[in-house]
Image (cartoon, rainbow, N blue to C red; front, side, top):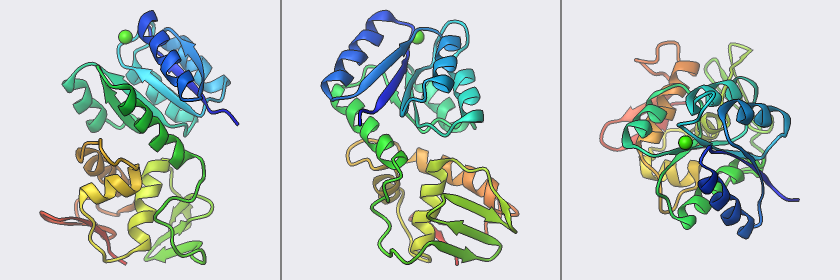
Length: 232
Ligand code: CA
């Protein structure tokens, strides 16, 4: 079963290089060259992953990302050219799963794609050791591991796959403190790449969704200078 990757990139040459690189890795690709076309293909062609450039004619990558996320949980990797764009990806509630800064190596690109495809494939991630644990209940929170669903007081919470994976990882090993690096490795699947700020941003988003008061978290606790843990 070939994985299909949608490349939304207006620079013809970069789009072609990506197509060639990904073909070598065994992926099928489809290409869009502006934001509007990209959005349309994202929602109609059902790709397994999207590479999304930030600066695009028609509709920029930020807008495209938000609009895709409104309707789909497909993994999105943003392609950025500048550090200030990275800050924006990390700081905004766009719902992008990851980013790559140009110029990037083929090896880095492949690593990122693999990590993001893996977690979306409904493969049970490395963190799950106990097959009997289908539901984790803590306080007013219920985490259904099999259905990728989190509810608070019986109401299902709108949560991205990455947020879910992070919550599940922490909740399955309550009270155990994990460093940001460990979380990146286990939840994001990076061995060599990645920015620990990604972890902080995802924790912040998660808290806004599951905590009564995100500034006084009940579930995901910061251990200063060390990392995070789930308080059961
Ligand atoms: Ca561009």
